[in-house]
Image (cartoon, rainbow, N blue to C red):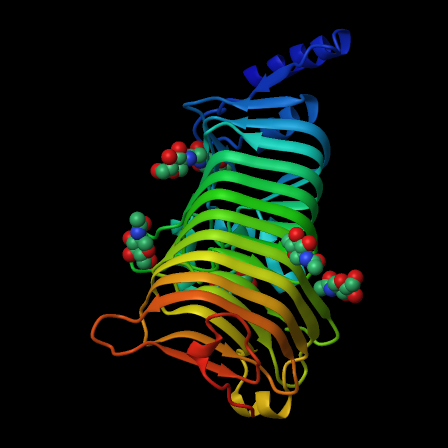
Length: 396
Ligand SMILES: *[C@@H]1O[C@H](CO)[C@@H](O)[C@H](O)[C@H]1NC(C)=O
Ligand SMILES: *[C@@H]1O[C@H](CO)[C@@H](O)[C@H](O)[C@H]1NC(C)=O
Ligand SMILES: *[C@@H]1O[C@H](CO)[C@@H](O)[C@H](O)[C@H]1NC(C)=O
Ligand SMILES: *[C@@H]1O[C@H](CO)[C@@H](O)[C@H](O)[C@H]1NC(C)=O
Ligand SMILES: *[C@@H]1O[C@H](CO)[C@@H](O)[C@H](O)[C@H]1NC(C)=O
Ligand SMILES: *[C@@H]1O[C@H](CO)[C@@H](O)[C@H](O)[C@H]1NC(C)=O
């Protein structure tokens, strides 16, 4: 219990000398022990908490760090979440949106995580378990929840059981210089390892990050507004995605004022994408003022895609077109190689549900020996200097 003694000392020090900036250092309690209580106590007690180089904290119980103010966590070592699957299945923090759960909930005002260390989700045990149980709830590595002015920078995140980052009901949240990697060591894939999902949040920046994962690199989920994404290197992902939107009946989803620029993206299912549901018993919404610009693509299946019939049968889309309206979406400076002949596909629902879609400076090349590039479009009047590549779009 060396740590608690240190804490008491620092707390009393703080009481006598408020001008100083005391810090708590948390080291591992030792094999078989849970370091979550010590980490929580330190963050509560001290403005700055240091996890030193060489320390791996074993987090075996959930981390509720909401309602904090003016805190810094210097993660120089490692925080690793013990993969006790039965524990987490019943004890992760849960959110109704897409039935998500998380290990760690961080919220409050003026929070800063940095330090060059690693957040480790110990995902392999989860990838293996998920292969056997497809309904297993797998925790998100880090959820920023009900927070204002948060900076998370200069750390690595590895092998989350599910998403890396969930931004839920936040304002002014910045992620900078992060390296994210989810890699399975066997044939069980690291599924649903989205880099970021942004939900009900405003003013979010994601800059200068490397992501190697198995689902969306960044996803702008319902009510993500004023989002700035710049200089990402995404590998193996499902793309930079708006949506999916309009999934839930009676719910109105907005994604507005988004810029994603200077993106190098390889081996992905999609490059720049907008996806919205159609059909009966789904929701509605609006996508407005979204710019994808400067995407250098390598070996991506759908480098540019709008799909207003996401996860819906063609007949249901005809009968019940998407009620997510799309206006003001630009794809500017799309270059590199596709893995299929159709390099761009902008497939909108009928009756002007897509408007103001611009395509500029396209230089997308299909795979070698597969013939000329094809461009698909329907129910949209494209503008911009690449519009002629698409020819006349069919109306349905
Ligand atoms: C982490 O803590 C749990 C619970 O105390 C324990 O069962 C497990 O062995 C610990 N893991 C390590 C690597 O110390
Ligand atoms: C699969 O995971 C779900 C959700 O975590 C759980 O309720 C269920 O009992 C698990 N099924 C099996 C066969 O373990
Ligand atoms: C991320 O990876 C890049 C390239 O390997 C490296 O230069 C950078 O220092 C890494 N950043 C962190 C926070 O680990
Ligand atoms: C990039 O992703 C591909 C496909 O998932 C994978 O095979 C490859 O190892 C990844 N490259 C790096 C540098 O991680
Ligand atoms: C999104 O914001 C609008 C306008 O404030 C609101 O009506 C709608 O319920 C919100 N949707 C979600 C999913 O939070
Ligand atoms: C479009 O979104 C960008 C990025 O948030 C913003 O800078 C710009 O002002 C928005 N344009 C309009 C017309 O709202």
